[in-house]
Each structure stands twice: as C-alpha cells, then as structure tokens.
Image 1: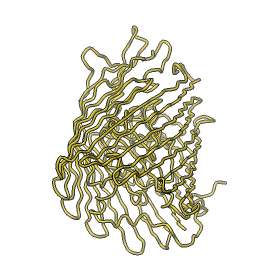
Image 2: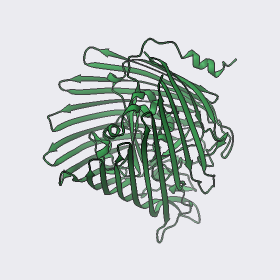
Image 3: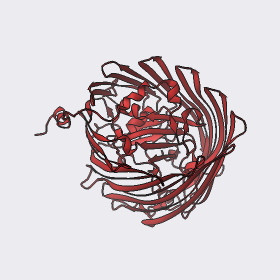
Image 4: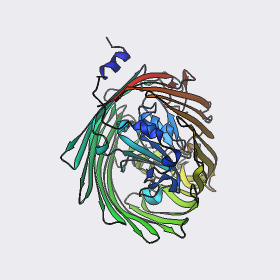
Length: 621
C-alpha cells in the first residue's frame, strides 16, 4: 500500500543540530544600494557590479531561490521577468527570451551551468529534463536577454542564462530538504567537508518524482517522470591559483514505453590564476554525455570542450579575450518510422577566438567593442561583432546602447534529417541570423527604488522555412523567412518598508515576419514559435520577526494563437518559518487561481497544468 505523501515528507526530516551554514535568506535584508553592487560576470566575462553592466540583465540570487516555490530549474526561472517559461506537461518545459517560444522553436537561448554549455547542437535547444541540480547549491542565476554572440558564440541569439553554483567552501556542513504534494515529491541532501587547510569538498544528491498531468489539449500520454541527480564539487586554493573540479551523474525514468528516460554524466575542471594586479588567466575543460530515450527512439550527444580566457586592465582599456576548441559526437536512432539522420552518427569540430575591449573615453563614458570568430566543420565560419556605449549619467544611473550580430548555426536535425519520399536532407541550410539594436537604462531613481528598462529592435533573416522539391514531395528545409521584432522589457524593485520588498516586471513584443521575395514556406511559419504579446509579473517578499517569511506572486500572460489558447492570470504563495536555528518548514501554493490551465499550445505534447499545494522542510546542521 502506498504511504500518504505527508508520511514521505516526515521520513526525510530528522531533527538536526545547530546550523553552521549562513542562512541564504539573509540576502533579503540587503538594501537596494547593496543589491545594485552585487558582482556579476555574464555581461563582460569579468566581475563587475550589476549597476555597471551595460546590457539587459536580471539576477536571481540564492536568497530568491531559497524563497521560491519552484523545485526545478525552469520553475525557478519564472522569477526572471525577462524570460518566458511554459510548462508543457509533467516532464517538459520550454524557456525563451524575446520570442520564439515553443518546444521545437525555443532554439535561440544559450544556457550555461558553471561554464558548461547545456545547449544541444543535435536538435538546437535545451532539454530541461536533463538538468536537476540541488537548487540550494546555486549561488545565483544571471539572465541576459538580447544577443551575446561576441562573448558566448553562436546560439546566444536572444539571450544567455548563466547558472552558477556556490563554492564548496560556502557549503560546509549538512543540508536536507524534502517537499511533497499530491503531484510531486522531492528530496535532496548535501554534505560539505574539508580536506586539509586548502581544499573544500561537497557531495550532493537530488531526487524527484512527478506524476503525469490530466488529459487535455494534447494526447493523453503518461508524462510522469522519476529520477535523480548526484554529484560533487571540490575547490582547492593554492599560491598557483584556484582549482575547481566538479561533476554530475543523472538517471531518470519516463513511462510511455518501457525503457524511456534520460541518463548522462559530466566532469569539469577550471583553473584560475591571478597574474598581477591587472591581469588574470582562466583555463577550463569539460566532458559531457547525455542520452534521451523516448518511445524506442534514442539520441546521444557527447561533448569535449577546452577554452582559455585572459583578462587585462591597462590604462583606459579593460580587455578580455580567449580561445576555445570543442568536439561533439552525436547519434540519433529511430526504429519507429522513416525519419532518420543521414549519417546516423557524426563527429563535429569547432574552434573559436574572441576579444573585447571596454575603453574609457572619459570617467563616465565607455565604448565596448568586440568580435568573436568561430569555425566549424559543420557550419563553416561565423563572425559575431558587438559595439556598445555605456554612459554613467550619474552616480545611480547608467544609460547604454548597442548594435550586435548573432547567429543560430544549423543543427544536425536542420541539415541531415531525412525521410525517403517525404523529407530530403538540406546540406545547404544556412545559419539563422540576427542584427540587433538595443538601448537601456539601469539605475536608482530613489534610495528605495531600482529600475531597469530596455527597448530593442531585432532584424532576423535566413530563418528556417519548408519548401517542396518535387510535385509536391519531398519537402526540404530552407532559409526563406525573415522579418522584424521589437519590444520593451523592464523591471522595478521597491523597498516599501524595511521588511517588505516588491518587484514588478513587464515585457511587450510585436512581430512582423514574412517570406522573402521568391521564397516559399509551406510550414506555416512554425519555426517562429507562438509568443504572447505581453507578460506581466508582480512579486512581494515580506520578512517578519521570529523567522517568518511571506512570499506571493502573480503573473499575467497574453493569449497564444494558432492553435489558440487563452491568456491567463495565475498566482503563487509561500509561507516559511525558521522556527529554530537551521530548521525551516514551509507551505507553498502554485497556480492558485485555477484548478487547471494551459501554458503551451503544442498540440502534440501539451497537458493542463494543475493547482498544487505542497509542504516542505529544509534542515542545515
């Protein structure tokens, strides 16, 4: 007989000794001015205060993560107002920035976990169900909306998500976490310890069991998933530099057919050396393997990556540059139907180099210019330049503008997917391209208020289309779509009272795409995705005496067309109680306004998202 969910929770909640790790919720007590000085590294690939980052960048701190309802990475990413997150069913999410939302079309957002790219070059995109770190180990998540090709290379077209974990030195001692609801159970554990005076280590494990969603818009498939991820991180400090070694292994079961699920492992090493007061060097290498199995099909991707980065401050110049080489080996196996990759397996090589300079024209005005060049055995040469102006208009105000070029390189699916008599390979399929113009403001209109806003104009060309080669079959992928997209995004944080902080965010987007002269698209522009015209969010954080926290949020998302689903308004809430040192209990509610609602219009996968009430505990000792 299956035990009640509340019994499962109690089984992972032993009474600990006193806490030794700092409570991450302490960050919520930082002032608006202190939050503006949070160090970020994604905008320039070097550490700088958030207030000086000349790009559309939002930071999810570890305090935000600790107080969030989400038990998975994509659910936590809902905290970023410049992202659009859709939960498709019990297993799958899609995350996008500045458009192209959809399971097949959210292919223009690059995602890094501790410097390791988790963007799949086999199909273009991120498989979120492959990545389940222990959320309590994350230091912060930096979300850039807008192109980042100069620093991060191809596929950083509409944004970059940089997920960074804490140093092992900051996670000493033990942590246990458990949550339970009618639809989901999770459990996590971590233990950090020292090896000598200079080496700190942590090991962790994370388990989840998510039930399938009810039947609805899509087919009534069993979309449940059950799995685990475990790993370690070691940080070693020495006179020669700082060495980090970390790795993960994961396995998950899905239940459409026996054998469905995911598995994989990775290992990363990164060495940082300060060469002097004005220069530093970083060398990083990683190996990554993942395999996805669904309905007897399987795809596998193996990646080996090596890159170096050099930073130098010299006079008015602040330089960053680097070189990298990567090789991937992929395979797609499909015994179900005629769709195959030709060849079924392939190894690709990629080499790149980049340089960027932030040159101070005056004490307040800087020019940022850079370029990345990448050569691939699959997609040829790509040149990705970037030019920005940053003006510190006042002590608490930054104005910036930019023009840049970014590309999404062809995936193996784009060029090599075939189905005899129905779909021909597309060996000439070219990169999808973007020229982007942006202007933004970041500042503090008052000591209790922070504000960031960006307007942008994106011109896309050579986007994916479908044409007939025969009369009418076979079809073939081509590059006949293009057009413009423009919008505005922004967020404001207000410290209403010393114990009450509110953050609001909004995005608005307009699109105008068409088939270029002489071209054709029989696919109905499906490669463009289906985006809501607006997204609004409001979140409140209240910190009370006696270890009590009250968090609530509401979001409004516009309707999506073709096929149509209604816009929706949803709310979430959380009550946390740190009733003793290191012992926290909490109750969280998600999707509180409706019993079910739809977030995606993917007719092949979408199932209704249900209201959920969960309880949890987090213990540190």
